[in-house]
Image (cartoon, rainbow, N blue to C red; front, side, top):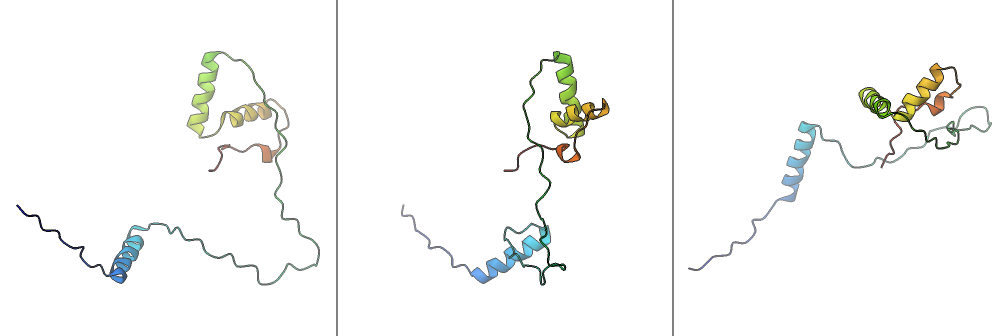
Length: 114
């Protein structure tokens, strides 16, 4: 029993690239390439400094409280149902109770982007 070893078949790279590009277009697969950032053609009028810094959130302090299990479960279910964080649920309740919470601190989704 002799086994014959077959050589790899030659591959035409341009043809494979074309088929890949067609498949990407047909299936609407997003591209991983990053386009170059093009600066604005002309600077803003007025000659003054323009502040491009976003409004920063206030410093945060941790708040730890003990609540009944049934209430913790209800709050977690409400947060999951509304697709927001527990922090947002609590801050909304504080606003409804008459406390002042700045709009910038009322982010609904506090998950970290990775």
